[in-house]
Image 1 (cartoon, rainbow, N blue to C red):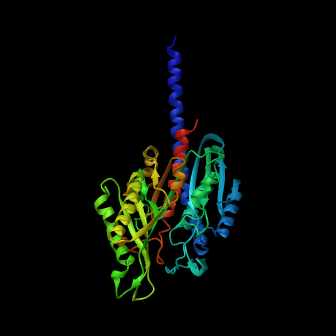
Image 2 (image 1 turned 135 degrees about the vertical axis):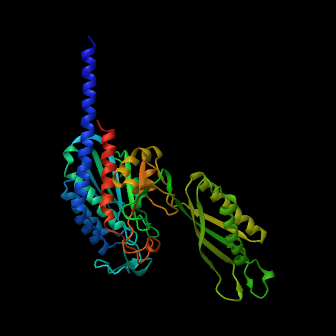
Image 3 (image 1 turned 135 degrees about the horizontal axis):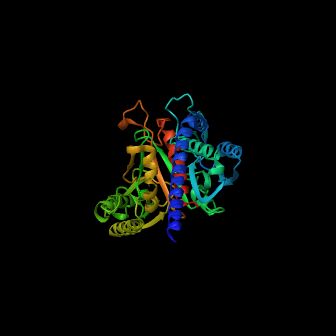
Length: 436
């Protein structure tokens, strides 16, 4: 008497599984085809943003363009998030999880020297000076690719098994002195709530990698970025009689050498990479005066939170003891910056097949980078996956590609089609796995 019921249940299970597989294949086919047909429009969007760059917390026209676009897709749109951020909510026609997708909006105070037909001729005020501005990091492409994803998913919203939050974030490159903003402020203002985001995905175009390559890794992917200021307090005296004072310059020089040993001799580098770099030394006004103070300013990059704490302590101890040995005193200030960009290991493992489906054998695990990203603030709240999209120009040998944040930076726009497919595929695959 139980056999017909069992057969029916098995048939129902088989049918449900087959329908899910068909639904997944249908979506993948649609994403691939639509990304291809949208590519020309995505390039056009990118070139518009490239020609009209705006600095951090000043992305006014950029925000207006994005808001108008999201409104045209009949989304619920919120503007003015963390000053100039824009958020669009696309409610699907079927129940399911909430996926956050993020693109950064701001440009840099860097001149554009690539000589493209759409290269900007824009200046703006930065730290009290009039400076050239350009999208020398690729944020213009990030916005354009996310617009492509928004366009394709909005066209099939009735079939979408969940909700997507399109997060266009200002000030990733850091806020002007005295201002707040960026991802940290967006989180504080509730960008991951109402509706509550379950996971967040983001990508960064990467000019030094082959076009179409997707690079990812679990756990620490980009470094925490902290700033230190070490002020050495000595005793001013005449340069001809150094023994009558305490030389803060000599002491500062010894501290610089000592900081190098914090990494080379006191840090377990087989566990994770770490960097200490002194970027500024300031002291004195004349050749024959030993000054009263010297100042060292630098950066600390770490990929492991425990190592981060230890290195902070090692810097303080090293500076204080070297200063004491010279009869000087020091003040050590360490300002925490962006946290580690940490890809949730379970989420990364679960979504890696999606990246491989998009990029094939060009989807590769990469080494961690000691650059930093404030996408990490989103990942501290919900599981996140951040990956890199290779976009090396075709006409330049890979080793000669201009780095990000330089005047000659440029990308291969063909790679953006892969980026659109990757973000859309991650979104749909996650939804299909976690929807009813």
